[in-house]
Image (cartoon, rainbow, N blue to C red; front, side):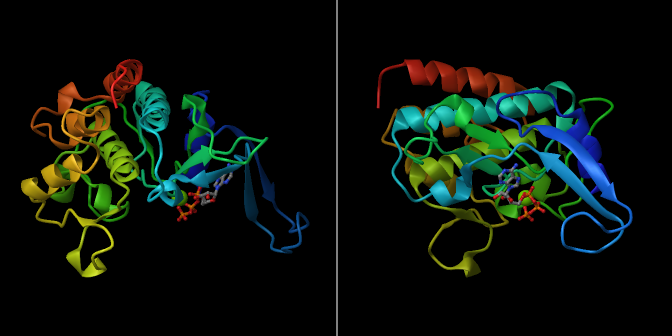
Length: 245
Ligand SMILES: Nc1ncnc2c1ncn2[C@@H]1O[C@H](COP(=O)(O)OP(=O)(O)OP(=O)(O)O)[C@@H](O)[C@H]1O
Ligand SMILES: [Mg+2]
């Protein structure tokens, strides 16, 4: 929790990142009704929204997903600009804001809010390093993260692409076939054919959603340098302006 607080305090001000206001250490246990001394309260902006994972399964317009994609990569790019890697990106840690008027999910880029920086780390240098595969949502681990080899900001981009693929294909990704057949099994041995088939489910051949998620999920991982959040944001932006389905 102390790390989360330190990370929140350093979080850049960005429309796609939850805003942190202040914290309060309740030394004598008089705040709220808990009567527990030593409780630490973190105050952030309240997002009136839904977890991204609960939007998987519903049909969303291509334009909507591309707008959310731009927002997601924009938030990540702002974090990455200070060498902060989120490391725990999954559908419960991204909220989609609701519109106050209709309470439907807002469709613009600003609707996306990345939260939960409890596992995030700021690196002194933005160079890949090995991390343990303990912790984090394994379904969204890149091949090298699964092998506990290299890890860097690219792994957040990978996880973001997985979330966008789930929205586009209307199916969830899971990492063990024993989870049943409700979702798509990326399984720990990471079969290329399964991944390619999943990307095809994101839209017909040559579709913009397929191009977006394929740019990360089908890209040779050895070339980590070429897919950064800033570049993916630009890709989502340009695809949104290209008038194809
Ligand atoms: N600022 C916020 N506004 C609205 N809802 C929020 C906010 N922060 C968190 N939530 C809700 O609470 C849930 C848990 O928050 P968060 O992910 O920060 O905590 P956590 O301790 O990591 O929980 P979990 O283990 O479920 O991820 C989020 O998925 C979201 O639904
Ligand atoms: Mg969380």
